[in-house]
Amino acid sequence: MIRYACDLCGRELDPHEDLRYVVRMEVYAAFDPVAADEEDPDDRDHLEEIQEILERMRDIDDPQIGDDVYQQMRFDLCPECRKRFATNPLGREVAKVLDFSEN
Image (cartoon, rainbow, N blue to C red; front, side, top):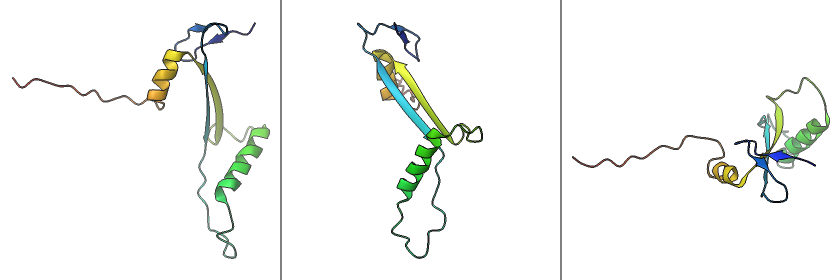
């Protein structure tokens, strides 16, 4: 039997009783287009070219392609942690607004 645990809080999740959420993330280096070809500058689809490079990189097991270029991650979350993650996916601290009385 496969066992799941929330990757944030560590709570064990029962696949028959608990709802489990999967978060998949890709982090990759953004390549800005270099000088465009003078002949057909509008015919190139730079986003498609980057996507093709990234797809090829997934199949390559090259130690020179480090986590600073491409990284793929997968996390299991319980419902409570999914809610916290969806509210603040980058983990930024929320500024606390304090309402002081005018004494």
